[in-house]
Amino acid sequence: MAKQRLRLRQTLSRLKNFIFLLDFQDIYRYDKPLSPAPDAPSSATFKIYHTLQALEIIEQLNPMSPQERSFAENRLHKGDKAVIGFVEGRPVFYGWLMLEEMEITYGVFANTASGTAFAYNLYTRPSFRRQGAMGAFYRFTADYLKSRDFHTLHCGIATNNTPSIKAHLKNGFDKSGYFYTVKLLGTCFTLANHQDYPKRFSIYRA
Image (cartoon, rainbow, N blue to C red; front, side):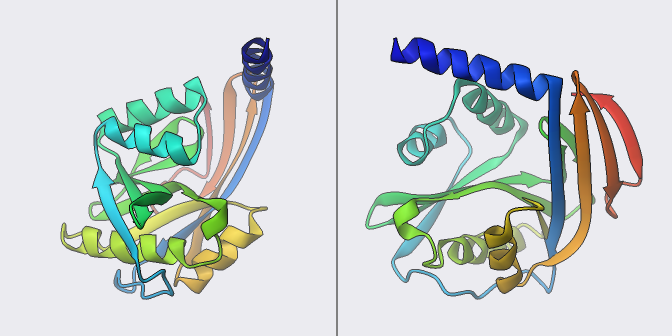
């Protein structure tokens, strides 16, 4: 019965998001050059994954719906990287990286300039929040990107996610643009302002 109720809620959620969805995200950028030096748990270690093994670890932190898992599998096949943080061998944080691509809205992507990356879907175990895990992630990510001749890191943050905005500003990010999308019956209407996306207004099927 519980599984049936869960499937029903997921179906209703997908139907609701198909009918009408708002996705207002501001884009933040780090390019000073990439060398964040934030507070961080001294024992935090990070590892990059590019196989389905990442999803088994992520599930321990934050169980995914079938749709979320399908999205993650697809992004791994596209070349995205999962960066997972551990403290004393226990996963406490994960974030994802796109290389030379960024997400405009749910399931819609655009190519970006050479040497740019896009961080998304960051998550911290509740008991480790406000302890510098995000800063540690960006410090590790900056070293990883620099070693591969990347010079700019973007991330998208919902306009109402004040804690995340403050954390990114603290770690040296600056606002660089936005993607504001209204989705109606599967059609997205996006107002954009970003140097890597020249169109100011777009209409497309999601």
